[in-house]
Length: 329
Image (cartoon, rainbow, N blue to C red; front, side, top):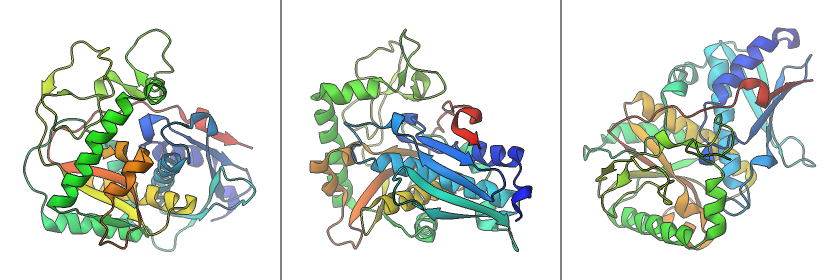
């Protein structure tokens, strides 16, 4: 693809699709740059959106940016183009996550293009799911989606699911006892109260979902201070259906790969009729993260716990306008 074909409207369209990606607390920690006259879109992490207490190594920040990178690849395929990422291209700038070269494709990647409608259909659902089991062939398809991005998706058995859920509930206690973590989370909550951040980012009250009726909920409660008085209560599934996304190593490059795999799995699940939510809470505590790993697996590091099932879809959460995250130079 010639550099002159990569127009401003096209780049803006690609980024508009990319930023539908999920990110920790919907912080949207990405910046895109297009240098006119080139065929590349740069992806940078935004250090102003880091979370020092919950994500000190910036692993979750990389995951979110990796998910946005995958969305850009899907958007390019929708336009009949090929987006080829080069990860971490500048060893002197750790916040420069990727250069994505956009070219005319000899053959459109239909496996990517078909995912494009799911970019805007995929939303985190913090609602109870039914007990209906997910067919094995759908889970196999999700495993294959992760493998296409160089990652592994594990489906834990009963004992392993119990171990992960124990870690989830332990992380709730850790969080409740740590005022600095609670303060960091509060920065990204949007209830309409005075002094909160912009409404184009963070987690709005309508996305909290219901309060748990008992202690089985696999969902993080973003309103533990109970600032929203009219939230209903609900009983969540006692044995959630979860999958574990991981890699063999634990480097920034692996995190970016895992973010792309995460988005591919989420989009595929959405097209398969599943609702999804992300459970990072137990992975934010070093003393709990190892509990998510199956000691019999070659997957050395789990980067995300994904809850899957049949149930209400979540609502779209706000996104920052493209001009805030895209720069032309």
